[in-house]
Image (cartoon, rainbow, N blue to C red; front, side):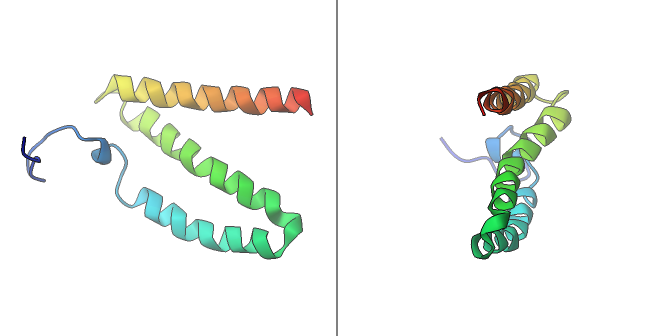
Amino acid sequence: MTEPTPTENHHHETRILPPWLYPALFWLALPVLALSLFVPGLSNLGLWYMMTVPALAALFVGITQWRGDRRVSVAALIALIGLGLVVLVKGWIT
């Protein structure tokens, strides 16, 4: 089985998200994580930032892939609902 060439119109997992999304958020995350490492009072900032990166990616996939690949879109939205339930239940526990 051969890999599809970039000009062919095949569905592939890496083509769902734009190629700039995770590298851009990674480079934005470095100063936030460094700040939360050196200023312990801001550790929650780094934690919440790292939680929002996959949530934003799931939201992006859920919205942009609704017409193209509904299964991926529904899976991303279910993951967001699950994350919301975890945060909600955690709020009840503490």
